[in-house]
Length: 96
Image 1 (cartoon, one colour):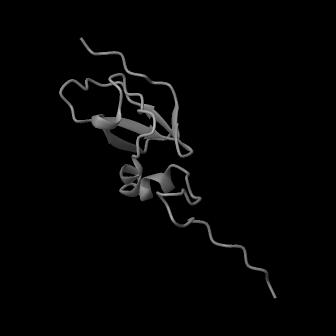
Image 2 (tube, rainbow, N blue to C red):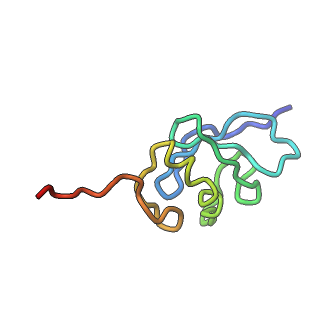
């Protein structure tokens, strides 16, 4: 029997995450989509509750530091403290 997974939107530092319903028995990570797109990241189960809810006060910045390009494709172009240092949009320049 597949345990019930929390498929409601969760946020981590402004990033919307939704756990994908799969058979996660004996798995070391769960898969989450980013911002309602098809981009995804795997979050280790040591940072999660049994139903896939992110534990309170868990620091999972390293997961997103590895997936900066996926964040950009998902639409997170602004800097995120602890994860992304730069924005991908070009700064506004006044024409002379």
